[in-house]
Image (cartoon, rainbow, N blue to C red; front, side, top):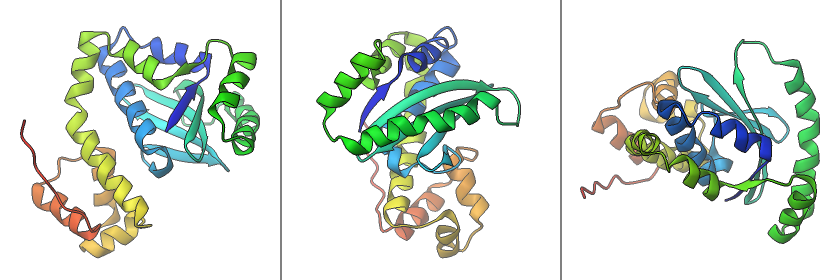
Length: 214
């Protein structure tokens, strides 16, 4: 995926660099976005409009990042810290303005045209590679980021496999003979699954588990 960040989002993300626990989790979640944007589902991502999505990052605070995508290109548009359960009024307005970006993505498949558009309208935009490099330049942030790798790698592989099979959490749970909540807890990282559970998941998805120790 090619991901472009508007300047205000880059600034929002970098504001957390002084807290390695939050910055490490943000960086790991945004890496997941880069790899699997089309496949992300709740609890990691929620569709809030036709093609506007909310990446949900749970740390000791609730962080939301809005993005839209078409084919292999993503625009990351806005980030905020969620303080209440209600939808902030300015977010409703943002649901309207995001359509401009989505329809622009639909009209062009050329990254050169997108970059020209960004240079003209959003100087200071960033690519994910540059943001990631900046965030991981802090050793403590990188330590948290690396510690999350096994959990996120497994989650990403199984989530992608489920999406490619066109299976909902409910259908997968029925195939495993378990409850949907068990699948949801696993995908949200709220449980430490046994190897037996992971293996059953893989078999249900037509996949195989390979273990490599380096």
